[in-house]
Image (tube, rainbow, N blue to C red):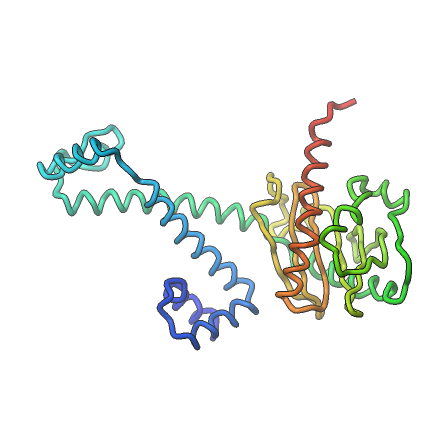
Amino acid sequence: MDCRNFKEILDSYLSGELAVETNHTVQQHAEHCAACRSEMSARRDLRNLLREAAQKITLSVEGSERLRARLRANEMPRSPFVSRFLPRRVPLAAAATIIFTLLLGATYGYFLLRQQRVSAAELSPVLMREAAGDHNNCAPGYLHREGRTKMSEANIRYDPTCAELDQVAEAGAQGLRLRGVHVCSSGERRFAHLVYLRDQQLISLLVTERDGRAMERGVVPNDDGLRAGLQHAMSDHCTIGAYQTAKHVVLVVSELSEKENRELAERLAAPVCEYLRSAEKSTAARPDR
């Protein structure tokens, strides 16, 4: 299945109208194609928004009776907004069509605005390559290292908010052995790096600055990163999952499957992001000295 075929049958897939074999083909394509995976998520969000909007349109008993009476008389209720678009008297079927069209347009406009904001938070492939490079070059040196380490004072000065990363991630790191805590570089980027081991599989938790080079469009969005959600990428044999805050990107890098890496990202990176958002808000709230 190519991307064109995927998009042609995507709505049928979301409506549950396809055969089981075709569903599997759609899912396999989405698993390996980030663009189509994003398209699937966008269309699912639109369907949910329309469903929610329709469910919220309710009238009181009296209001319903008045509306029925006016529609039976072939007359739409007069309001300044409706008057701009409708003549004095409209048939019932036409009135229903116009109302639905206005609702659909408003909902779709909101959806497009939301998607533009999400698109603005897309991370750069350069960042993903740097994260994979850091994992491949740095993490293997900790494969046989024993003992727990802590972030050094020099590294803490690099980014004070990263001083307690190992403690913040500890709850989600159950079943993993922490092998290293340090700051390192890959290309032009620096990372706070926690190296974990699980059954001889190395896993990196990386925290770096959310700067223009980290973003696909070269501009950092003015938000707290929540809207971006969990983003995925493959680079240099590595699977990468990434969350964002206002000032940081938190990545989990491994050679595990996408499903396993996603689970680790939710366990390790999500609580780290919550901690960083809280720290960033506290820093922003402090008065200048």
